[in-house]
Length: 120
Image (tube, rainbow, N blue to C red; front, top):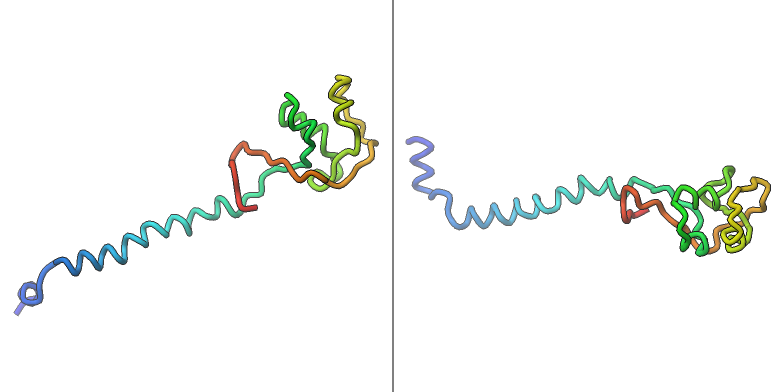
């Protein structure tokens, strides 16, 4: 008696095997990408700086906003403590490194060049 003879006696690939295959493989094919690709969304911390409403609603480029807001010594947790409305209206946008700094009081603004949203 060969293996194929035994398989014919037992039954071939029928409804039970198809259901079993769907129950095991379909969830695996759906969940595997979640586990393998979540590193993209969990590991990246995008560039961020203090959110200043006056500057965020201006027509300045993102790079110039970062230059105007964050001091070189602490790029993420502090901002210059100046009147940004007055600076934007004057047109003199040169940054003085001796300006006083303060904590971020309106949250942060994130660079959305690579990602729109991440978990960090």
